[in-house]
Structures are given as structure tokens and as C-alpha cells.
Image (cartoon, rainbow, N blue to C red; front, side, top):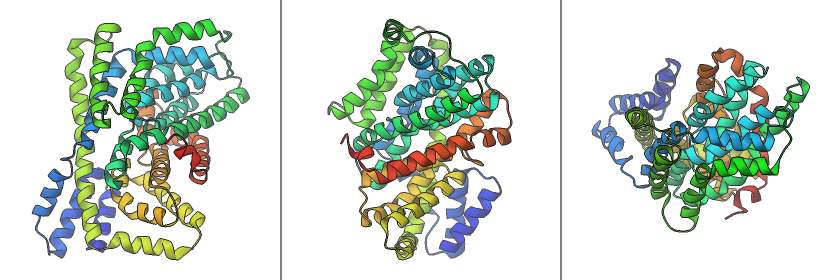
Length: 421
């Protein structure tokens, strides 16, 4: 059955079948050809796999991101970021990255971060003389921080798949997420200096920063309430996601007054479509993974990895390479569901903490958001800027290198992930 699963899945992916459908069809084909189990198995997994209280956080975080994106929150975060770094060489590019870091603490999604920030910042950079490909690459790469800095939808999935605390995953992602942001800023500064991209000409002013922070106080309060509520034991991550929806709605509708009641139908439709896409992937990936487990394939892969070398460094580098390759071709959610039961036991056997390994996995798969052919952030960024996917893929290569360097630092310095726990 294992050969049938992988062969049919590979053929479907090459045929450009959407990942969720490909996983489900591969499982169905394996059941039909190899027999032994009824097709009802697939139907059962599609329903029971999404019947989970922790997974309720996903639609709520998606809805919260949509509400906040339309409620004027992103514009105020941009103003705060610009007051801090806008005057530096390449200030508009640096502002874009800092804003993505702010928005990441609200949305939990990479593509949502690119859409919310890129729609404003890519045209702003181009109008100031930045190369369009570089401007798009900046936002597309920084958008991947959306799944590293908490809250994070992939972290919710890892917590469910690996039976680890989602709250601990959230807090462990803070330092690595900031580190990725700083790494991207260093390269953006270097490139901007090389190409004479000046800042906004304004001096950094504590008074100005304070004014913009005050103007954005409700926006900045959202991650404080979400994360503070989780770590303070006030509510669970799922309840925090629901609270984020309520808070975002109140702020956008009554405080900033940029969210209109007539827009709510579109907000709910977009959120429902994105949620449905993710949950289809969750259901089919779970069924696919269960069939793999029944065939003892995860155990065989784990034993093969452990037989490669007795060195934890070699084994971990092998797993990172696998994650980077998988990230190029597979959706992050599907990769987490399928690979966590395979790789997590190997990581713990060679001495890695499950939370630390979860962060390694999330950062590695976050790079998949900007690697072709399936890099979702590339498609969103290219759609905003109107450039070809091929040219954007070339422009983003230096950012990929930076993120891989940060990934290796996070991998071999556990304290970066575990310090705040």
C-alpha cells in the first residue's frame, strides 16, 4: 500500500492537482487497489480529524486576520514601524519588515501578512525608486514570519499532531521570529545601501515614535491581550483566537471606524473559503498519514534516518534538508500532519526537546512559503506587484539564504527557543 500511496500522490502532484485533493485521492486509490479496508475509512477520517477543540483556533485566527486587515490596523502598524526605522538607509524596506513582524503577532498566517502589508508597502517602495522585484521579495519573505511569531496556525497544527502544548509553542516562537526579522532587515539594509535607497529624511524622534504608538495603541494591544491571556491562564489558545475576532471587530468598527458593516459578508466569505481549504487538507492529510502508520512506514523512515549516522548533528541536518525539500512541494499544514509523527520521535531520540524541534520544523517549513513551485507568498506578492513568478523567485534567493542561516542558528542554539519557557 505504501508504494501505491506515494506513487499516486506523486503523479497527482506532478499533474498540478491541489494538495488537499491529491492527498485524498491518493488515499482512496490505495484503498481501492490494495483492499483490506473499506472506503468508509477515508470518510471517517475526513470528519473525525477536524472534530477537535484546538483546531477551532484556525478559523478564528483566519477570521481575526481578515477583520484586522480591513479595519485599519495594518496602516497604523506601518506608521509605528516607519517612525522607528523609516529614517535609516532603506527605511521603507525596513518598515515593511517590521510591520510584517507586528502583523504576524496578530494574523497567524503568512499569506495574510503579505496581503495586508504588501498592498500598501510594495507600491510605496516602488514609488520611492525601489526595484519592484526587490520590494516584492522583501514583503514576501517577511510575510513568512507570520507563522513563526505567535499566534501561528502551523503551531496549532504541530501542537495537535505532536501532542505538545500550543501555548508553549507560541512562546517558543517569539525569539526565533524576531531573529528571522532582524536577519531579513540586515540584508535589506545592505542591499539598500548598495543601491542608494535612502530613508525618509526624518530624524528619529522619541516624541514621534510615542505619538504613533499612541495612535496605534489598540492595534498593539491585540497581541498583548491574546498572548497575555494565554500565558496568564485566562483562556486557551482557541479561546484567545475567538477573543481576537471580537477585539478586532470592536476596534475596526467602533474605534478606527474603517471596518464597514457592508464589508462583513465579504470578510466571512473569504475566511470561510480559506478555512475550508485548510480543513480539507487537515482531513485528507490525516487519512494519508494514518495509512502510512498502518504500513509502518514512519517507523521504517525513522530507522533509516538513525542508521545514517549516530551523530545528532548529521541526523538533524538530514531532517532539515528533508523539510526544506518538502516545503517546496507541499502545503505547510499537510507537511506538519504527515511528517510530525515520523520526525518527532527521531528528534527526541537524539536529544531534541519536542518544543524546540517544533520551532525548527515551523521555521524550515516557513521557508517553503517563498520557495517555488508552491510558495504561496510568492503568488500573493507577484499578484500584488504584477511581476512574473520567475523573476520574483530569482530576487528572493538572498532572503532564502538568510532564513536558512537563521534556521541553522535556531537549530543548534536551543536556548533561542526554550529561554522564555
